[in-house]
Length: 496
Image 1 (cartoon, one colour):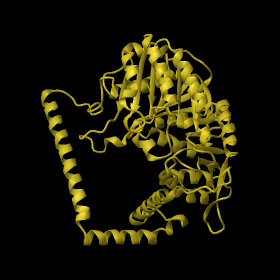
Image 2 (tube, one colour):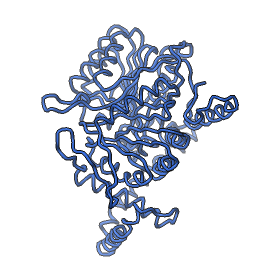
Image 3 (cartoon, one colour):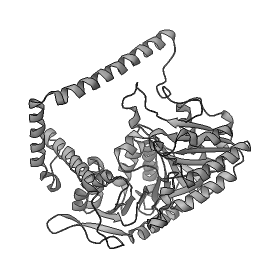
Image 4 (cartoon, one colour):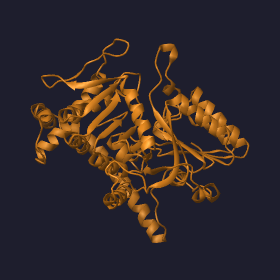
């Protein structure tokens, strides 16, 4: 078993501690350590798209393709046409797309050539009346498995946006993927099969036959962390790694939203002398998320965490590397939507060579980033302009409003419940929070219908949904059938 970031000594007395820590990581993530794999780091979309297309065109038995966004553009059409070619030759092709991710990006007609060739396409979590908040859970995974021999995963969606726009002088997005070979393929295939069966009938047994017999392909130990809604396995793993890191913890994230518990974990590590670094986009494709990210800078900076903003068009990678021994690459962002709400897919690698490669890439990325520092009066400021000389914008009014909302929620929650001591970065918002609450209270007293009517309509909707669920559950129990809510309302005919 390879060494991990929490046990760097090689003395015999450390062996029991390593075994205990390995057991803790396995139980925390719900993912055992799998030996005998090879992992190739693939930087940026152009390299990943080329490898995907090559593997698809060489497929002989099966293709499992799961992605959050399929955008109807040159890149997606090229990959779809490659899938059509293999399906026409008898290769079993299964595709899972996310409804929200593909909304406005591609229509059902985009998949007609593949369906006509014999492929199958299913859509994750289409909104339905009986689940008012069900749409919040998304399939955010990015996975391609070919012939149960090679798998590709990371943060890259099927869209030419990742390639930038040379005509408009927009550089490619910065993103990270990996190619995995070896026994870990059985867990990656199983993760796709679980998503597929949640949308209808399961994969044919022939598609998973033989995965248990996949032989070694290298010397890398890794865990396949296949997150499902409300499981929070990766959240617990990220917390544990932050607690166990001894020297370095370097993080890259596209949509960082600093929930209090994780901010505290990173701050505690930094105060203990760990070199904690966070690299995030300087300009986000979702401006509100940029504002939310900046809302968490101050407590991190005050604790000694170093924060950097990418100077390119968009940083979309999701990686972590600790102590040059442990690394994570996948689709999960450091926010509650990824940790708790979505289906996500990451690998956690315990290998010095791979972790070292990721550290070197991190250092290269920092060459195109601006460090965020606290000015003498504790203001968060940026010391360098963009590479083209322009000053970076803060995400617009939407981003600033979102950042203020997050600070308000965290600070007021702590003040009202008295659950912890407020720090210097939080006390300044108490007065503003009090004024906001007073204004809201006066509006409700003067114009109660503004609040009562929407709440009444929402309550009636929820009541209808719960009564419908009660009636169907009662009927099924009476007939001796069990209800499987994971498949209710999902598409099961192979069409998007």
